[in-house]
Length: 338
View 1 (cartoon, rainbow, N blue to C red):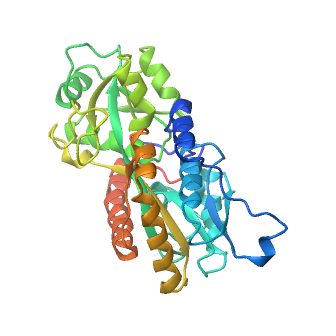
View 2 (cartoon, rainbow, N blue to C red):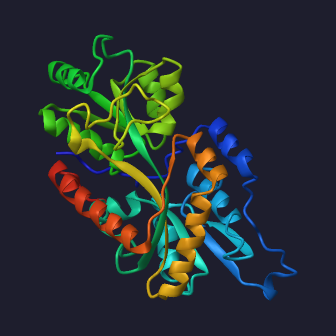
């Protein structure tokens, strides 16, 4: 049985400070804050972010709204950190349903959290209207010096874990996350015990480099610099195709573990009952930014892929991810968080 944590999943700073600076410099990403002398004369839109300023999702939100001046001449990025993004979603639920208030939220809030929390403070399907995704990124399964150099593939690693149960450990940003359950899926597919260590952030990478744990599963942007430096080894990426930043690293599907395929996305939602007209207008404005070369180039530096669907396509994606992770969480024996 896998017990739930005493603390909720919090933001994973998946991007290094250097990468965030690159993103910030790519387009002058300061959010558009209205001048109080003129704000009353124009519509002010708000982009809620459930995490603190300066993190990956916050920076991407600021980059996004700067390109949306045709949608709204005045934008505020409204950070509501806490409870892994749940506080911001609860705030959005009670906001005006007129297209002026929206949120940029991660997939986990909709695909995983409903299965791991007894009380969310929102209903993932009744309280919001999906608008579109903005970007997505896979995870990277990595091993460190604890694992012998001859272990080069995911299959090799599974065999090593089975033969070395006391050393079969992996770190992620948090319990109850996609990262956590990706490791659970790997262990169940190969029938070995895989001890999960939640770090509440990227600290697992340092323990991996130091030989204190065997493996980590983190967003690709978190692990990438350490793989490129040779400090740790990448066994597979969980994306549907190989990363252009690590073209020699196979996908989990190529490695024979299609069930491990997973990506986190950041998507925009508005309150329930928002009319179709502002939803479609917002969708169009976001997709114009997402398809712009500067935005794509900035995300590429972070090993993050631009996305963008119609509202209907996005709604189908949210439902598919929700349906996919539910059985995985239940099969893991995870204890629900109060």
